[in-house]
Length: 219
Image (cartoon, rainbow, N blue to C red; front, side):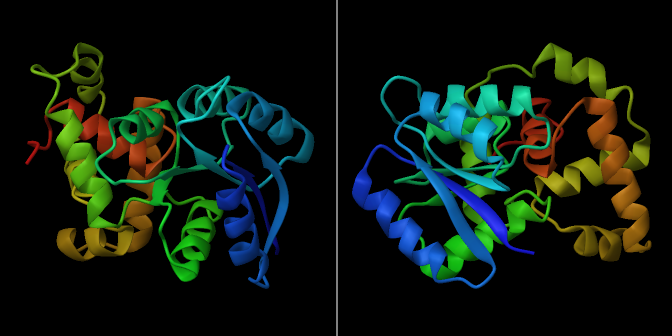
């Protein structure tokens, strides 16, 4: 199936560049563009793209607020945040708002296309070590664990808590299964239950939760 993508950025050169790169992929189609967050919300409602490539710093409505509104309107919406540098506090906020991952604007054509495919498949773009480093860096800012997070931990079983920690460390389902010596299907079940119990969208938000609850020590 063709992956339908909406590109959101206030810089025309960025939009055109990504459109050309993605348009050259046989399984990806750029269905629209938006120049700010407010226009992005309208375009998502009208075009129903599979993936939204979202810039953060834009006029009228930034990418964080746009992501929050898009996800609130459609829990299945998939937003891939774009940024110019990796340790960006705004990216961290976007991940907390519901983005499924992020890419640097200087990503290669292959990295860009692969990122779109990963997010479109329902996975979170968490594997790159830079994402883990980003979460670690800004989770340090909170001097104490978040109380809602602490309260929710009690809903998890011991094994689910163990799986959550491994998710935060950047392991895939297959890697977690190998580490715990169980079937990968078992891990998928644990991950699904973790997301439901904690009211989270995906693995990225699960990792953020684990750091903020101090299940994983930043750094």
